[in-house]
Amino acid sequence: MPRHVHEDALDDAEFEQLLDGAKQLRPPWNLEAMFVVLATGRLGLRIGEVAHARRSWVNVKKGLLSIPSVEPCSKGRDGGLCGYCRRQTRRIVDREDDGDVGELREDYWQPKTASAERAVPFEFSERVEHIVVAFFDFYDAVPFSVHTARRRVKLAAYVSALSRRIYPHCLRATAASKHAYRGLNVPALQAMMGWAKIETAEKYIRLSGGRTKQALTEIYG
Image (cartoon, rainbow, N blue to C red; front, top):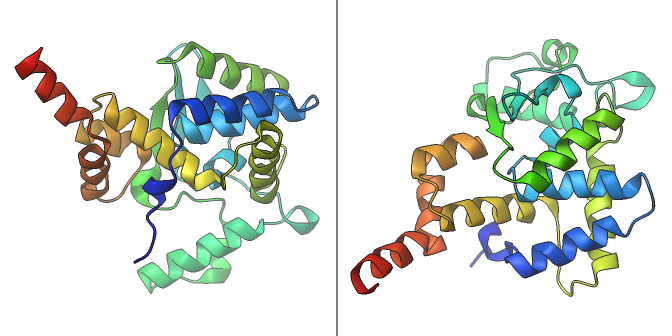
């Protein structure tokens, strides 16, 4: 039976251990690693969204990181589209079956689905807010590729001495699991994570046990 990513979600202690590993890296890799870990593991961003994020996405006054429908990408060879974006355009064409890959590649980075265009709040955590603001005070845009973002996570995991495999998508599952357990409702969780299907949010909330715990607490005190 295939393993679902939610099974690889980190608990709070493991997440703190990973973040501590990120802090121990030499500057500016420590800031970069903390941003990737928190953006995926607390804000629930996809790794492609993290790697293409820009200062213009961040509204500090409103405490929102807004993921647009398109964004220029020059992370590839000779300033062209990166491999992640090329693969994404192929998926869009395969899904819609009426596009032209050549034309799409002349467009920009695009989120995974239409529902992935969203605004993600970050003020719920002072630590997340601090790192998001600090990162984009230092960088106008994320200066590294999807591949390098994955390497930052891998290096942070190595330094933290976590004894199991850590990867960006399991950090996204970590965010979903945490927010579901803390009581975020189905529509809000779906909106935050940018899922196309509401069933995905329902599954995380059901598996988290948070709703059941709250109900039992109300009954038994």
